[in-house]
Picture 1 (cartoon, rainbow over the protein chains, first blue to last red):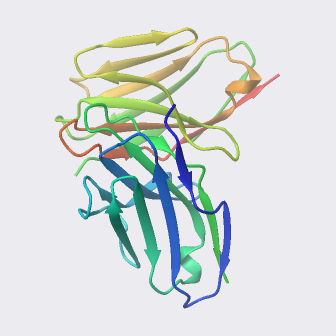
Picture 2: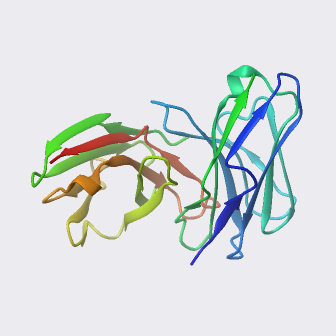
Length: 112
Length: 113
């Protein structure tokens, strides 16, 4: 069974803080993704990675960066958190051969 | 890039009735169409998918149909039960694009007992 885990379920940070969200998958998937989920807006892609050290911008990359130093780990970084980044963040992974995405449990981030 | 539109945004049915959710996509190169179910407070999970070489796929009470010419696909749930209440997301992807999927905005399905 594919397992995707995220470092925190709930996180509260202050405006201007640097925030790290971490995602780990245990199925050797090539591709990993970070989404933001807000009511009525569906799943919006922030960044994705198709290989170690490779990254591509998604639809809403502004204010975010990512790091993929190991195949199983994909980190989302908020360089200077702002209140409009309060949201649910979902990580996902998939194999290139199938495209079926497996999601982590989500991190609900609140920026005060 | 790909654009996926999903309708309706909310759907309420009586237990035992059928529910249909429709999605349209814009990129004719898309060839993989999954549906994900997200129960309250949980992660999205795949419930059924279809690839472009197939027109229909069924798994017990759920089915998906694909019309490549019209670029739309639909999720059909028959004999709905209260546990079908959830948010459903459709998605479209091109299988050579590093697994990147474009998601619809979601449909909140409520099944009333």
